[in-house]
Image 1: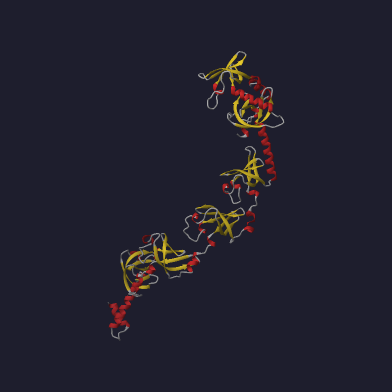
Image 2: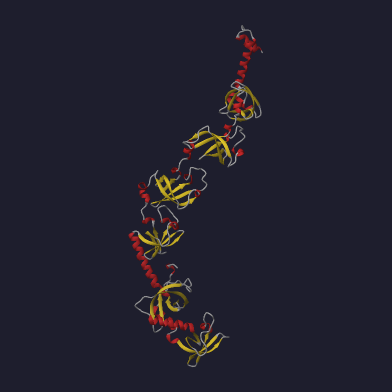
Length: 550
């Protein structure tokens, strides 16, 4: 219940007590009677209470836990006369106990009781404590009329004992106001001094911790625990731990005290340059593992992030948990300090031997090696060779350009390849499978050279020219400017084109053909043939004249 729900009535306290006492039993209501009859059929005992009067007593009041009747006919029994022929054995016991308590009551001592509200009357409530019934006036209860108090546990202090009337008055209000005054005193001191004080953790939740400071509980929100940022308190503290805290705020209406642990300790980011620097190697403790990386504790209330890509030189790290475990101590290198964002980044792999160094010490360009296919992409396959991965590009799979990594390979396959390039600075290795096979262009070049006349079938057209097939797996390019007298727009796939080889390089697997040179070459060949057939005295003009006539 909140304090704002409490209703306080202006009531004449003395008059209210008198009204309550008039309706309560007094000491004189206790009488000693004699059991004259036990009627188990009607579940009654008839008791002679003197003066020629008999009264009925419910048998349930004088049975033990095993349903045995505690009295027999002729036994004396002390009961409470409730009037109109009604008596009670249990009420008599409670009254006797209360009378005993009242007789032993020491007004010089303070009695704080804790009981349950069992009854409600016009003046207030009855609070039962270990079988004793105390009266709590409504104005001293601080109980809301909006909520039924029956069954509610309450704590109160005894404020009045009337031995003559056999009544005890208790006040919950007194204790609450004392607590309020104590709270205000504690809060005032905390907020005014702003000095760290020692508190004891009483309870840890997902959103923070409740800490006892001088008898008052305050909440340390999880964002106020560490300069690292929001943290899970259960990972760092246990109930019963002592911590330094400072007060941040107090909501008087809600009685909510906000505390901070981080503000009670120095902020490492204010002097970060003197604590750590880029390039430093530090020992860290793994505190949290996520799929995308690991958070590590550097001490000094500092936390850093180790990205998954900085864990190992192996590019196929699937999850950091395969490499690290929570609580493990590791050495890392500081690679970034973001003062404004209060973020630190570290690297583990920078302190590990570089696989490329080990690779280049063992392998060279031109070496033929075996490796395992680790992944396949649209542009090729990655093959693990020793400690590193190399790229086997689609164009290096086979001389047959219709073949690629997806059609020819599977992850886990062992392949033999040739190292064709090593870029140590970039950490890249290029591999080739087709380099281990005979080149169709090389075979073609054994029977053809620059100036050879060839015929090919159009395979493809690009803006820069036309590709023709000269032989199986042997293609050549006719650049647009070399197509004359053919017209680019009129050329179709499957069309045969005759031309002259203008460039052939088996090492690069490239051939270029020119149609334009074909006409000139045919003219030159015709001229050479004519020169052989004609007399040595024939002039150049005669030779060309005969050609022109034709």
